[in-house]
Image 1 (cartoon, rainbow, N blue to C red):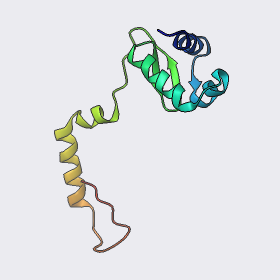
Image 2 (image 1 turned 90 degrees about the vertical axis):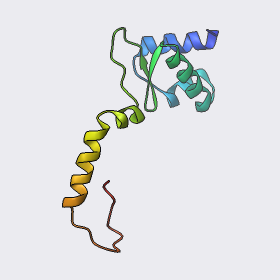
Image 3 (image 1 turned 180 degrees about the vertical axis):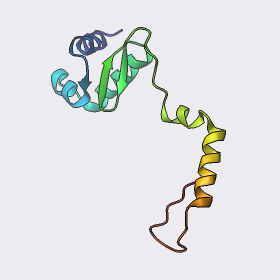
Image 4 (image 1 turned 135 degrees about the vertical axis):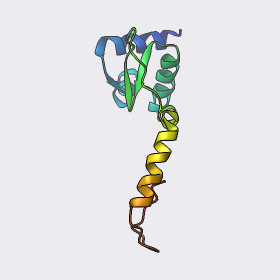
Length: 102
């Protein structure tokens, strides 16, 4: 682990929830660099990435699945529900307000 990554990881542990914008100012580097470093530390299990920042890693905590992973959970049931909703929802032809459900 690079010295900068160690400092970043320690900062997250000490502060708790941190934001990319604040880290960028604190470490005097771009937000793009901070995001890349946080992602790398997340992949190493040293912290947990959150929207706009990071949280300290917690031993034994369940990892929140990504949206793509959640889409695959109970897929058959979700498709069944979407199909039933589409059949029971009135549809206004050629309307800009119409939103596809399934």
